Each structure stands twice: as C-alpha cells, then as structure tokens.
Length: 311
Ligand SMILES: [Zn+2]
Image 1 (cartoon, rainbow, N blue to C red):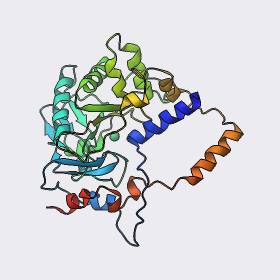
Image 2: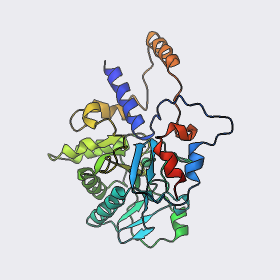
Image 3: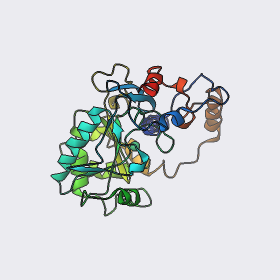
C-alpha cells in the first residue's frame, strides 16, 4: 500500500513539472512539422487578448507579455533563448516577488525561463512552461542588476543542495526561505517546485506558521532554481487546472512522501519479481504518450492554431 502511495506520488509529482504530456491519438503525417518547431520559430507574441489555452504541459498562450529584460528589481537571464514571455498575471507576480526579495537583502531576482512568445512546447528543456504560467527563478541571490546581455548568457546559478541530493548546502540561506515563503503565500500561486532537500529544510525551520508549506512541492532537479506555477487566471476559460495539491498530499507535505525523495527515490529497493511482472504487463497495454518535443499542432488545444497564425 505504502509503495503504491509513493509511486502515485511520484507519478503526480513528475507529471506536474516534467509533465507526462498525455496520450495522443492523432498521428503525425509524413513531413509534418513538430509543434515545438512551429512555436519555437515565433519571435513575438500574438496580437490577441491575453489568454491561456490548455495545460501547463500541453497548451499555448495568446497575447503574451514580455518581461522587460531589466527592471528595477529583476533581470531576465539567458536572453538569447527568448523565453521571457508570460501571461500578464505572471509578469505581475514577478514584479511583486522581486520587490519582496529586496526586503531580504537581495538586489531583486534573476529570472530564468518563462515561456516562448506564443507559449507551446519548447525546442529544448522543459516539458511544461507552455501556457505562460510557469517561471524558473534562480537560487543565485542577485548582488547587482546591471549584468550585460553577454554576462547573462555566461553566469550560472548556484545549487543550494549537496551533491548526494540529500540535504541543503551552505548556499541555502534564511533569505531563500523567506522569499519562497512569500511566493507560496501569494494568492496567484498554485504550487512551487523545489528539490526535496530544500523542502525538508523548510519543513524543519517553518515553526508554527506552516500552511503555506503545502504549496512547496518536491521534485527532482530544482536545486539551481525554483519553479513557480500560477493558477489559471481569470478570463482564460480554456485553461486546464492541475490536480489540487489537497488530492495528492496531506497537510503540509512534510511526511514520508517527502523523505521518500531522499531515500527510496535515490536508492530504490529491489522490486519483488512477481510485482515487476504485473507492472510490465500493465505498461504494455498503455498507448505511448507523446512528450513535449514529439507533439504536433493537433495535440494542442484547437485555439493554438490561431495563436500561432495570428499577427
Ligand atoms: Zn521550470
């Protein structure tokens, strides 16, 4: 039972960020371009009302807004990727959180990938970040906000976790904790993905004010940046919600399902032979799922065609 629960937890968690794209029954025609090539080729947003279509890992974004490359309390990093686009609700969130960061000794925030100008699947990295509601924020505390474009291509973030993945390292500070807590308490935020070691540290230090911890979700990676995911915004009836956290985790999530990430996940117990056979049988029955970089336009919500072709 416990194994099943942990497995389910893993499936939900992985599908949250890396995202299982779901199954698709539309087969690509010969020579048909992949959706990530189509969306990856667009350099500006569509002239439409801002609106999200579909899911974080299977969708697109109309009327995206570009985060200014440098603001009073932030800098967008890796500008050559042209992924500093998002739904206006995310732009507003970045402004809020970056002001908050200055209250904890940071110059602001270094903002990593958000979305492409029209969202959609990306040519590299992420399975999600398709609908303009995801943003990666660097763990590196900005000391200054006048980095050149070239510097923003070259500098790297820092890891706040030990190499064995089991605990935080000396780069983790109370300011990280305070900024993540503020982000989690923000009403627009649906959930935030961090390395499990980070959440374990937060669980330890949270004290009695703990309700916000439930929005902090453990996931592999996420030691160089934290990933903020916003709720579906108003005015986007076609935006598909993610399973509520209350359905996949109890309370603040500081429990066995969290420690699993630094125990069995890293060092899996040997599966019993009988069980393994059953799982293999089930797997064979499932149709193959199409991941972000395999999707074609027909896999996405029908409105995404208009998003792609509109001026
Ligand atoms: Zn991310």
